[in-house]
Amino acid sequence: MDVTADANPRFDLSKAVEMAKSVYSLVIVLVLWEAVAQLGLIHYYFLPPLSDIILRFVELTLNGQMLYNAYLTLMRALVGLAIATVFGVVVGVLSARNDLVDWFFDPIIKIGYPVPIISLIPVFMLWFGIGDISKIIMVAVGTFWPVAVNARDSTRQVETNLIWSAKMMGTNDRRLLWRVVMPAALPGILTGFQIAMPLSLIITFVFEMVAGGGGLGALEIAGVRSFESTQVYAAIIAIMLIGIALDRLLRVARSRLLHWT
Image 1: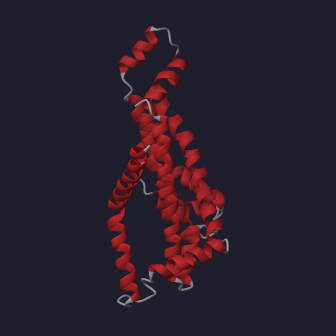
Image 2: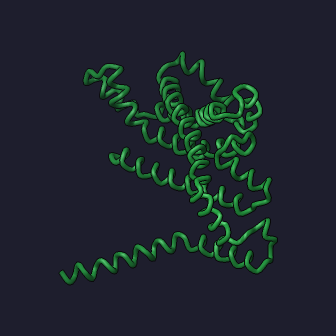
């Protein structure tokens, strides 16, 4: 009983020390930021104190503006990413398994993947307007490429011995795909999704900055136009927190889905 009681504080202390080691540089930067801003070494408009930014962030959260705009950004990014994931995985896996599909999509992927999707914002505004639909479609198009490429490449890299062994045991093509190929290719598919997820937030945020229509990007630009620099930084903090939260959730989901690896 006594040994256990003594062990818990030591464990908590070591865990706290490890956590401190992982964020110490960030803490130093934030303290310097507050000190420099409070001393007036940089004009308030360009670098307001971190304390003022946090107060503005809390104010926007309490009055509902931050939560509503965060919802718009998150909804557009995740819906577009979901569409891209479905089509990207289907196209990628079929391209790796079927020569005709690969013949058709390979030139499209080679040409579309390197194109900076942000440069197409005016085109999407002309075609679909500035509402939710245009932003969702653009996110879907922009995140399709990494999902499709990683799904195709990971499917191609499935060990031939696994496929041969399954066929020798009488596995038909349908069961082979779902029981052997897809599980073996899942790590690569999730890697593509992990690449596409922050990209979906970037595309949504930039599109909102350019076209408006609500969202954290529009909230940031509204702060610039009204000379409220604290609102600008508050919007940036919000999109950073969303990105970090989604990344952590994906890491947890990946570890559980791939526990067998």
